[in-house]
Image 1: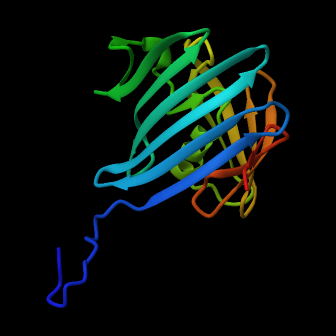
Image 2 (image 1 turned 180 degrees about the vertical axis):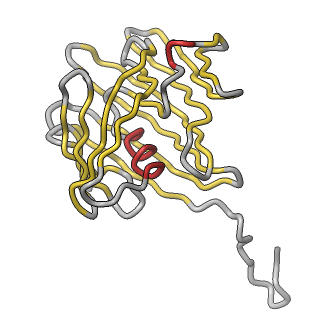
Length: 196
């Protein structure tokens, strides 16, 4: 909408964008993510090119969360060995669906987690709003890469400081996370760090 003097006024609901690029510390990998505010919540869109374990692959992801950072949907498209495949995870009607099929084994899940990407750590960090010294245990719908298999994964977050968290998973994996003022990871243990 234009004002009388011809300048453009940005509507209050105009999406606010954030961008980040992570680079792999151990492996030659990059992950670009754009975060955009929408009327009903937030949209995360990203592209990853990675060498994870012995497999090289590319992946595009899109995550929708509501204003309280509760997951609504996650879509991942993976490219590897000259082929492309995809999966979609939705939460609706108090149930989880994977590619349109109801998954009762995911009923305890509160979040989603993309293996090998730091993007999904922001969601429980923003949703739980932990105070320093507090810890939360949760279960996430874990999208494995490069297989795209979706399984439940128990994990926890403990807030160590104003911008530091300790992540633990039932697999025995742990990592210290450093985040920015939005909750985006800027350093993920010795695996990822913000580029630039």
